[in-house]
Picture (tube, rainbow over the protein chains, first blue to last red):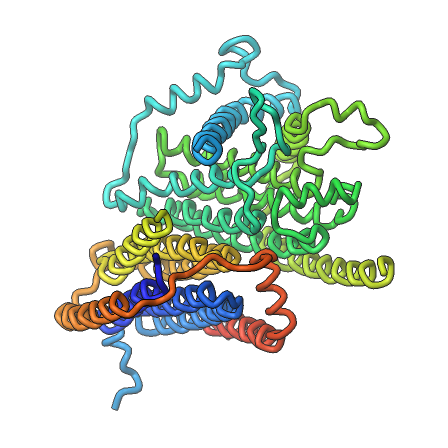
Length: 100
Length: 343
Length: 169
């Protein structure tokens, strides 16, 4: 009843909500959280197809995605904190130190 | 229909009620035990020997005025105690109180759910419980609760790492993540895991004390520090929820340590003293959990409080290396046992 | 039948909370909606039979990464009054335009999926060792090198985060 197409549509919708979040919001922490939504959408797709094809490799890949997301969140938030200490802002429109 | 819907609902009702009553009477137990440790008697006025004291406490907390600070985030302020309480209660879905019992001629499993990843479920639910503390401090919109909640959550996530690493070595010995199967593995081995993994037992006990914000790790909520910790701005029933959540967490840690290390529902020495198996399994489980609860209260009455930097140093520089060393040694011994001693 | 109901309910919650993450004015509320989103995604993984990944999702994502986000949000918002916690510069019209385009595309995919028959996700065949054992077997034998590289990546990220967030080196 629930075909992989259903899971693909859900994953695509979640992916696009994440992309819209990255493009629309100006607060950099919300942008990072939208990136996590994108990674979750990818994970849903991987696990749905792992269930369809009865191959556990999809879940192994999803675990690696989660590990990489954890590493990226840690480093990204460290960068945000370091930047905030210098410029007192989290609005990415004002993060233009390297602009011409 | 009966097996899949009615019986689990009844089990949930029984377990929830027993937990909530137990948590309420833990308050009385703690006051009594600490009083006896200090050569005094504790609550004696309400009811015979103070037995009705929790009822008086509950009535008092329920009729107290419910204050919400101005400019506090109203929704988050309300939800934070609930987020603290819920994980402590839903862990009971996987804890096995016994194997099978015949109730009115119907065989009933004495656990609510048997999931393959039971132990990981316990750990992950405990890690969601951190949110209650963080959000309580944040939503109070006040300096001292915010600092206290940051400290408390830093303590919790540090000791979570140590406890999870230690549990991996227990999983290695048991060969499964399922709590029911872990108890059966102890039955098959004939030895409780406290004898097979003594270092892990001590580490989980210390980590469990720190995870539940119990003395000597109760700096974040002590009255002398930071004006009362992360629940300063809470009053009435919400304050009660935080305290009940702490005691519920304590009972959960006792139950999990009993299941993992002390053999759950198994009677001690089943081959030497077979008459002990007449006592049903869940009675043994409750006795062993009660032993750990008494130990926690005893430790609170005896040991002084750790300072925050000593606490963090203990978690990161002592417990985590010990947990990793225990993991390595367990792995080596398992490989030796599996390849040489059992061809 | 029950699986279909569960799937639709879970996806409604997942997409609803995702939209709330992106559009909430208060950043702390955004973070809380993100936690709820991850918890419902973990429930979806259980529906798909991947219970190990589900508990890992709750343990690592909802219980670790989002706690990190919450800490940073609280530290950043520490000095500002509560009224400054919102975002007056967001490009709302661009968001609506993109959402409309995506909805049209998704409708096209769903219509295509309804016309051409696809195989539903069947229950697994054959003897099943537990999900955790299968994942662990693959992770430690065929994919050991990516596993080791991932652990080095996490170590490097940990050191990097400490160096970046220190007050003075």
